[in-house]
Length: 274
Image (tube, rainbow, N blue to C red; front, side, top):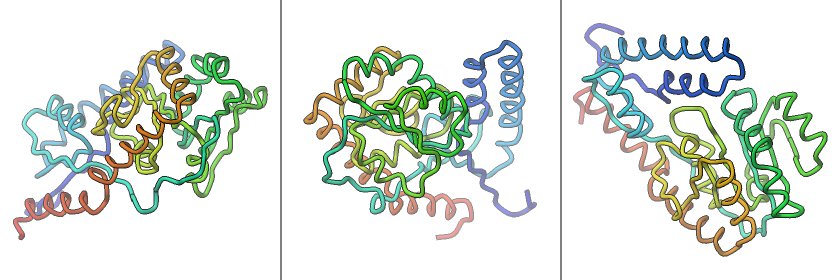
């Protein structure tokens, strides 16, 4: 910090919460203890340093409440993540009976989400929707994901792609079976803007102003998540209704133009300029 100059700290998520969630799904007792310790260290840092800034910019009201719980009397402003609604748009093409997940597999939250679906939901979905496919898009897929795909032709793992939009447009349902993580998921904003029918866990869409049953389906148990996905794969009209509402939410609430205005206002307030 530079004495005499206003300072702003942007929290893309609450890191201690992210690590705390990861600790719960680590495979070994040693791993759980280690990650839980890192979560406690991060929580202390957030509590100690956030009060030094004139304003803490948060991505969601959920993160804002969590930071205040950690750090007490801190000044905050909510400036949500956004999406380019001109770049990400719905298409008129008829999708395949397929589901899709996008995200770098070198991040634990993404690889865990894919493996959670493959281990705990995929057999149920395949049994109910013959011919269904699962597209896994993102760099550095793990060996376990690659091995499952090698044994199952219905699972297509692409690795990194230059443009996710054609893949997302191809799939009937966008799935977000995330169990760990923090902040807000940009993948969900992208899918909303493309007008996709989305099934997510509560963690997956945390901090985004979605409404269950209106512009997204939110399910946390593996069986209910799978059943919601099956329902949307089978029901074209339900997908269209959900997707149209998703697109409207992206345009109304998460377009960059509106978010830029909010952020500019925060900087003006901190610097005392008009």
